[in-house]
Amino acid sequence: MTRALVIGGGLAGLLTSIELANHGIQATLIEPKAPGGRARSQRLLGQTFNLGPHALYRRGHLMRILSKHGLTLLGGDPLALKSTLRMQDGLHPLPGSLPALLTHPVLAGARINTLLKLALRPKDMDVDTWLSDLPPLPRSFLYALLRLSTYAPNPGSLSAPAAFDQLQLAQGGVLYLHGGWQSLVQGLVEKAKEKGVTLVRERATEVRAGWVRTEAGTHSADEVIVATTAPTAQKLTGLELSQELVLASCLDLGFAERPAGPSFCLDLERPIYASMHSDSAALGTGAVLHLMHYGRCSRQVLEQWADAQYPAWREAQTKRWLPALQVSHGLLRAGVPRPSARQAPGLLLAGDYVGPHGMLADACAASAEQVRRAVCDAQQTAAA
Ligand SMILES: Cc1cc2nc3c(=O)[nH]c(=O)nc-3n(C[C@H](O)[C@H](O)[C@H](O)COP(=O)(O)OP(=O)(O)OC[C@H]3O[C@@H](n4cnc5c(N)ncnc54)[C@H](O)[C@@H]3O)c2cc1C
Image (cartoon, rainbow, N blue to C red; front, side, top):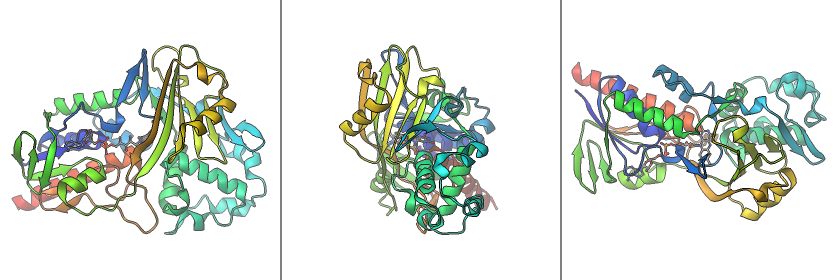
């Protein structure tokens, strides 16, 4: 029986272990902390907070793999609620359908044939080139949607086909999970145990093809899969990994009673949005509001923005400031391929920066499947 060691128990490591165990591979997961990584949620004063706002794409790779393994997660769709777009002249409804979009002030000045071009998947180019024909207002709107769905502070250099795919994905809707993303983590941990994955609480200090050194000793296996962040994977393996760190700054707020303000507010001009997660997901009593700035910003910037949209926000019972959160290392930039899952015989990678498919947690899921395929292929070749 093929033996695999998976290093890191975030979404990528959990999904990889489950995928491998599901194909008869003996998988051991090495993680020094409680599993979940950046997908873990925290309970504060009886309310559940994700690490900043987290949305699960209904038509993404993650959802597909969860349903393949019989995991059903419940939650609500934030865009079904009162969603707003903040433009220079104030708040407007966020257009949620094509007819609503066609009559919306955000399309002012756009020619219909330019807009029709956007319905076709672009060829290999960057987003700036793809959207260069658009007048400023519609272009800003698409950039705001792209920030929302990719976390790229500057979407202009994203690969246009990948950006197009991400916009299509967003149109399929998202879920805010009841119980936060911790319910996803919990479901994956239970599934891993059910499939026979062994969980070992150790920290890896060095990784090479076929072996892993931890603080407690050395483990060996046929395949080692590193499912940590890209910088940690580079440090552990000595591999040179291309990586672009994507940061976000979040102000997470918990209220005893829901304050006035929109369920969802996307800023057209500034890289900011806010989401009252508790309007769509069961997260405890009261209300949970996430304010987010793409990239770095000072706390004052988000606080001043909140003053205008949620005047009572200072009454929050929980105020958690999370500057410079590491969202991912895996934007799909034009002409910059991400590292592939198989790096060498006996050594593979999984995570949100690995492989050509998907972004964020969907890339974790897609890379887990790629690892499983590569390990099964190697097994078949060895048996032939
Ligand atoms: C603010 C924010 C908002 C986000 N919003 C969304 C969203 O809306 N939708 C979406 O799809 N994604 C979102 N994401 C991204 C998503 O959370 C991540 O892509 C995903 O959780 C990454 O999982 P991972 O397993 O690749 O990495 P991680 O979660 O970082 O897991 C890596 C694991 O490796 C472990 N580890 C580290 N060093 C070692 C070692 N030496 N030995 C063993 N183990 C080790 C760590 O403890 C950790 O558990 C968001 C992220 C952030 C921060």
